Image (tube, rainbow, N blue to C red; front, side, top):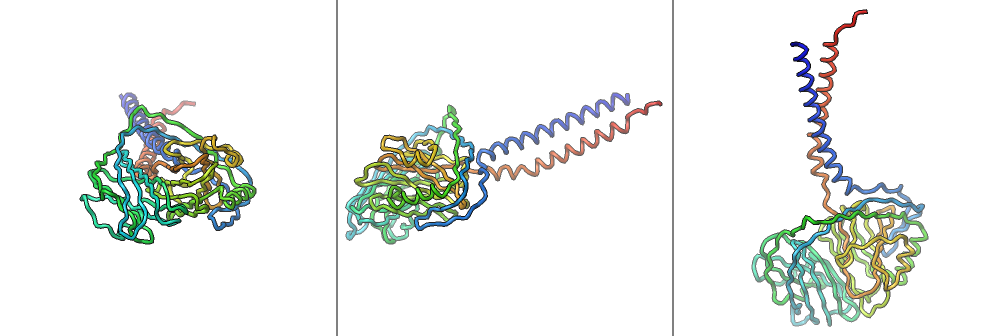
Length: 395
C-alpha cells in the first residue's frame, strides 16, 4: 500500500510539473515571438559624426551589413470619399483649390490641390472633426494637425496627407492657414461621415522582407551631400522624438510632412515642370520612437510597398523607367533613408511600423516567475521524497 501511495503521489507531482512547464513556456514563447518581430537590430559602435545645414549626418565607419526581418499583412478594406472646394477664408486671400477625403476604416487620406495662391508660401492644414455641421473659422484652427506644405514659385501645389479619425458619425472640414491666419476653408464647410473600424479579410498573405541596413561611409556621405547641392535631393525630412521637420532645397517642388502617430510618417511630394528622377532623404534619429525600429519598418510609395535597393549606386543611377525603391544607411545618430522617385506628378511616401507589444509581455512577467518558482519547489520535493524512501542496499 505504501508503494502504491508513493507511486500515486509521484505521478500527481509529475503531472503538476508538466502543466506548469507547458504553461510557462507557452506564455513566454508567445510574447517573445511578438517582441522579436519588432526588436531593433544591433547597432554598430558609434563613430564621430558631423551635421550639415541640410540635416544629414556624416560618419566615418566601415561598411557593414545587418539583416532584420520585416513581416507585412495585406488588408482589404472598403472606402468612401468626400469632395470639397477650397475657397478663400477672407476677401483679401488669393487663390482657389480642391480637396478630397478618402476614408478607409479609421484612416483618412486627404488630397489637396491649390493654384493661384501665394508663391513659395507655407500652408498649415488642419482637419476639423466636429459633432455639428458648422464651426467658426478662426486662427484656433491653424495648428496644422495634418501637416504643412510649401507652394511652388508659381503659387501651386498638389499634396496628399493622412491621419486617423475615431469611430462614430462626424462632420469633417478643412482649414488651410498661412502666417497663423486662415487662408482657405472647405466648401461646403463640412460633410458628414460615418467612421467604422476597418475590416480585414482572413485570406491575408504574409510577406517577409529583408531590410539591409548599410553602415554609412565617408564616400557615400559625400555623394549624398553632392546630391543635395545639385538638388537631385530636393528636400530633407528630419524625424526625432520631438517631431518631424522639413528642409526644402528646391523651390520647384512642393513637399509636406505629417506624423499621425508614433509608428507612422507621411511625406507628400510633387514637382512643377520637373523631368527625371529625384531622391527624398529622410533622417531618423534613435529617439524617434517606433519609426527607429528597423526590424518592422515598411516603406510604401503611393500606397504600394516598395523593395529595397542593393546599393547606393543603384539608387543614384536609376532612370525614369526604374521602379521606385529605397535604401537605409545606419548612422551614429540613427538611420538615413533614401527613397528613389523615378518620375513626378504627386507622390505619397509613408514609413510604417506595427504597434509595440512590450506592455503585454511585461504584464506576464509575474506569472512566468511564479511558474518557475513552483517548478523549483516541486522538483525539490520529488528529489527529497525519492531520497527518503530509497531502500538501503545490503553490502
